[in-house]
Picture 1: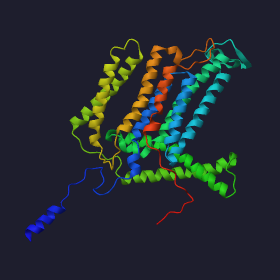
Picture 2: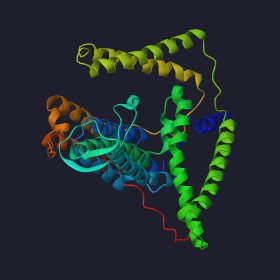
Picture 3: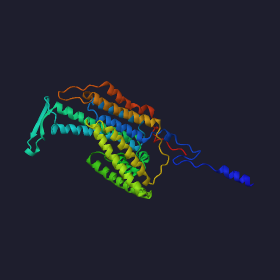
Picture 4: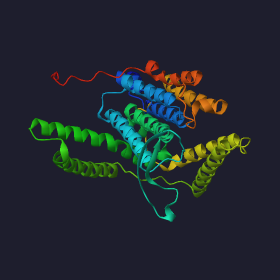
Length: 394
């Protein structure tokens, strides 16, 4: 009997599962296995935004916007925060129109000979030299403003693509421990716009169902107050949830570790700044890359040590698999190839406006931009949206 009892206990003994993995026999949800790491989406989008800052060619910028928009159209999940992409597109259009309006009413630093029209000019005092109100509006000035505004609009749309594709909560879970507090602040800021848009749509739909106006100044005021009230309630609930989960508590670490962490982080950030400055200047081309690499290594080591002060665990961490590497590499390839193209043929990426010439599409930089379409083919399609008319089954 003792042997049988002992063998029974031995048979019941099972190895403890690793942290972040489900218990044995519990399958991982298929939707979760199909999800891509949110950091890969952000790296891809920021790389496309970096590529957009390296050119003012409107054809290349339009191609970048089209590439990011197509990936969002085929891979955006059916979630409330993913609907913010349209708002970023509208913001980009508003920035474009505002920049053109400034060029019309405040003038442009680009001289031109093709006058489109002339506005009444307001005389200004001597201390406001260099600024004018009204006057002659040239085609060269408007073209320069259009190119410059289109670059900023492309950057905003790329950031909107990252907001629409990557889950903010999963991105926060993937951050290192040293950046957790900063990540919480950034995630709260990023989710403000999607939550605000969802509240406005919900309240406008409710007013339409009640037969009340939802447009105009009256509708805006009557919708704005409930949205503000909902934002305040959400802030109080978030603060209570963070306090209940022990947000802000830190672990005790030796003073030597704290000093080493501060020195590595500060030195690494200074090295990154010095290396970046060296890469951007002609004189620092020899030392820029080594200093940048040393600074990045030092900053990463400081973040690694700084994570010891944060008491947090991860439940089912998102894996960084081959698809995440492919998505990140596609965006990095677009940015690297456009930077290379800017150094080899700067005229193709930055067309001149004096004299005014139509822009041309460079072939191999355009082919490099098309590499950004790779996430549309290597990542899984999002789940179908649930049918609201279908009743839940029990």
